Image 1 (cartoon, rainbow, N blue to C red):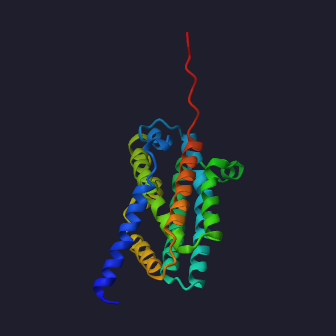
Image 2 (image 1 turned 180 degrees about the vertical axis):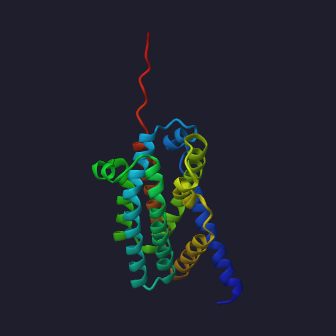
Image 3 (image 1 turned 30 degrees about the vertical axis):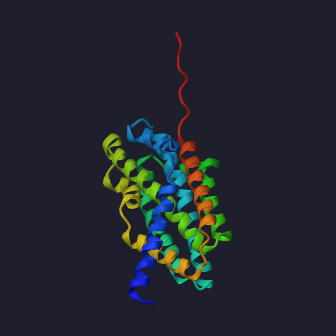
Amino acid sequence: MTDATEDAMTRTARDLLETTTRDLAPDPRANPLVPLIARGGADRDVLAALALEQGLVIPADRRAFLHLADRAAAAAEPDSAAFFAALAEGEALAEERLEPFAAACGVDAARADAYDPLPGCQAYPACVAWLALNAAPADAVLAVSANFSAWGGYCATIAQALRTHYGFTDEACAFFDFFAAPAPDLDRAATEAVRAALDAGSLDEDRARRHGRLLQSYEAMFWAALRPPARPVRRE
């Protein structure tokens, strides 16, 4: 394979990732909670619920990504395996950063133990677990990568709002800063995985997009489940 051919294939993979991310981008109205946090309208109990739900999502996703890495390695897809291994490592780092946010929201061990998870929030990690068991690893790379773009934007907005409206420290915001920060190494890993899958003919774009649409829908459910119900309008 010549360098020119390899460069062309890399560009094709990058274009596919960008196009899929754009096509699957959620409707801005699909997330009712982040705008509420952005203007300081969410109370501490809502933020605590966000911390508690993430405390369940993060370790579940980490295990799912490790399983996808193992499946990719077994299928002789080292680039996909490297991508999911990097994701799993990121989830482990994020879990460490979640604790200060939870503490700032008033979450302690007793409150965490007593918390009853919301089905609408836990549908997302259930879908990721389904992908880990059933999806072709290359298809999952494309689906998960497309979903992460919206998540990073949400985290950037929340991190700024926590500082501006809630007086949270940098340590308490580190979880959201982590996901909001650019991740060029992860982007390269995704591009290499998609390029290798295209070269091998192991990527089903239509199937990957279906997975991605489900992930985006379940993420919308996550945020909608956390939004407090609207207060009834009092009529005199």
